[in-house]
Image (cartoon, rainbow, N blue to C red; front, top):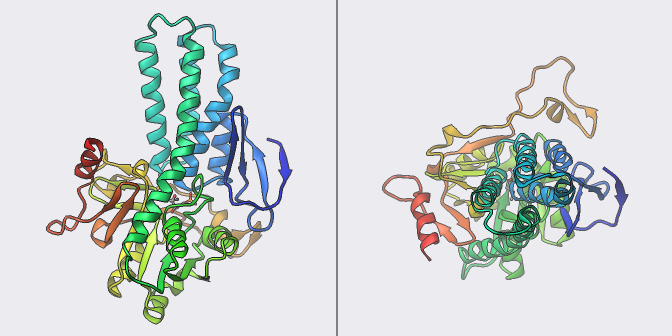
Length: 370
Ligand code: MRU
C-alpha cells in the first residue's frame, strides 16, 4: 500500500477504472491520507483494521478492490474455470474481514450469482473471461453510483417525516455520513437533508465509545459541512433527551433482520431504550442492502468482537489500567419494538402495530413488485 498526503475532503473512497484508494479513517481528524488499494487482500486488511468502515463503505470498497484486481487475474487465468476459482478465493478473503454488516455479504452473494450465470451459460461468446471481467467491473461501478442516489433518497424520505416542523433537534450515534458510505450518508444524510431544507436547529452526536467514530468522524463531517452540532459523551444521552427535548434519534444499521431487529454500533440499544422512556421517536436509516430477511430475529446476528486495545487505548495511548479484562462487542441489537420506523431509499417502513415488529419480507416484496 502506498500513501500520499492530500487536503482534507469528505470522501471515503476514490475510484476511477483501474485505480482505488481509500481515506485512512484511523488518521482522522488529525490528517487526511489516502491509501492505495490494489487488490482484495489489501481491502480485507483495510476493512479489518477499520481504515475504511461503515456498512455501505465496506461493501463498496470490497467490490471495487475486486474490480481493480481483475485485470491481473484475467492475465493469469488459463480458462474460465480457473478465473472463477480465483475470484471465489478473493471473495472468501473479503468475507472473512468483518462479520456483522450484511452489505458486504449481500454484495458477495450478487457476485456469486454473476459467476454461476457465467459458468452455467458461457454460450458462444469468444472471450468468456474478458466478458465476465467486464460484467463484474460494471457491477462494482454500478454499486458506487447507486450508493449515493440511495443515500439522497433516504435523506429525503427521512426529512419528510418532519414535514411542516422547524427547529428540529436530532441525536445520532456513530458515523453514518460520507465517510461511512460513498457519499451523503444514511442517518447523517437525513440530518443533512433537514439542514438543507432549513428545518434543522441542531444535531447532537455521541462520541461513540469505544472507538470514537462520533468524536473522530461525525464531528469532523458536521464541522466540515457547517451543520450546527454538539458532541456529547455516550453517557450524556438520557440527560440530553430530557434537557434539550430532542425530536428524534436517528441511527444507521449494519444489519436489519426480517422482524426489524437492528444491529448497529454498540450503544445504539441503550439510546433506543432512553428514547422510549422519553417518548422520543427512534428511527433507523438504512439502504435495502442492509436488510437481511434470511434471519428472522436479532438473536441470529453474529456480533463482531473487536480487539481490547480499541477500548483500552486512544491513538496508541493507554487509558485503562494495565491487566484489566475487556469485553468489546462492536455492535448491539436494538429490538424492533423500540424502533419507530426504518427509513430506506424506497420510503419509511412502519412497524406492524399489532405485533410490535416489522414485516420486512412484505416490504421488500412490495418494492420488487413496483
Ligand atoms: O464499526 P463501524 O464504524 O463500521 O460501525 C459503523 C456503524 O455501526 C454504522 O452505524 C453503520 O455501519 C451504518 S453506516 C451508514
